[in-house]
Amino acid sequence: MKDVTLLTNNGVNVEKSLELFGDMATYDETLHDFLADIDEKEQKIKYYKEIGDMANYAILVHGLKSDAKYFGFDTLADLAYQHEMASKQNNLYYVTEQFPVLITELDRIIHLVKQYLGLETAGTTTTVVTPKKDKAIIVVDDSAVIKTFIQKIFDNEFDVLMASDGNEALQLIHQTEQPKIVGMLLDLNMPNVNGFQVLEYFKVNNLFDHIPVSIITGVGNDALIAHAFEYPIVDVLKKPFNERDIKAVVEKTVQYAH
Image (cartoon, rainbow, N blue to C red; front, side):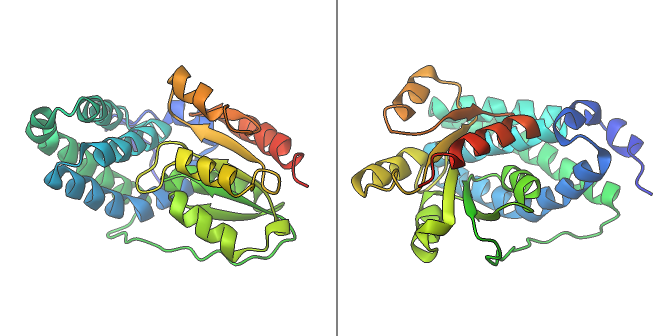
């Protein structure tokens, strides 16, 4: 049996996390998803820092901050937030100077989670989604935690197709019969092809009439939200959200499907 005191004694705010996950079984299961995604994310963070690409670095540490907050990794969330702010200001000196502190804390958390789950190693797992239901929704977010959380909620109702950026989302759309897709949940802040580029693609190709879109975002900037509403989206849901919130948005979104 897992000993949650291992987490709490090492500064993990499990009680706060349960406001999102509801129970320890779901929390523990989603920790596995965190481990499956985190090695690749850490490598990307290191890569963008090394080449000085502060725009994509900011996006990735923003995602790390969000995941850390969901799991109660408060120190890691605070450090990632500082790096997010510094990289948005193009403060490469701060990022370089404080990078070892961020990575040390991230590696500590990874080791702690593996200890808690009784794992010696945890590799990256690729999930292949096989269409099995009449209706599908697409979840576009660079956070595996968010995607898996939503998938678990709707897996009995929809075929939940998951993409890590806008390019993957558009590929899914072209590979899937459009009448099957009844809605899309789209993050705005992603590396490679971001949410606004997807919205523009939808506008140019008249896809909003076929696939209704709602935004899920950790961006609190009112100007960006207003810009999103310049497109015919259904709604915007800000992170962090709970199961009730996401169910309401999905229900509202799919009602618009033709």
